[in-house]
Length: 187
Image (tube, rainbow, N blue to C red):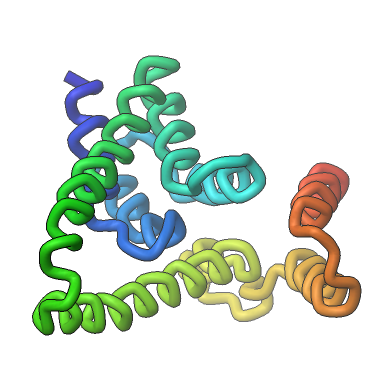
């Protein structure tokens, strides 16, 4: 039963996540409220591992979550659930787009999707910033403003942003450097 539920939940996420894997983060938070598969803290690890691993972010997060929840088979099932909608939609859209690419309703539909995608990615950005740069959960529990900002993470972010803007190296260099910094500076 857990495998069917994993497939179904990640199928829904794959179906409604438009704009990339980071847009799936709000859906993952919703899963933490409904099931005890993983915690909010685990989402932070999912993001970190998914961002630094090759492949689509949603697929990596689904694999991580499924494996964490139900072992290797759970990872496979969640991954299949997350990619199935995309495969089906791409096949259907490719067939239809050839026939209707000049249709004004199709063009209007694509124009309408753009702001929604922008909003979902913006929400993901805010969520990731809140998780990584702020101690939001601890703050909401204590309402102590002194613990709100994670100064170590903010300093690391500032150094990384400076390096990215100044040196303009290949992204893999920054990913590896971030992983090493995370290992060295872990609390």
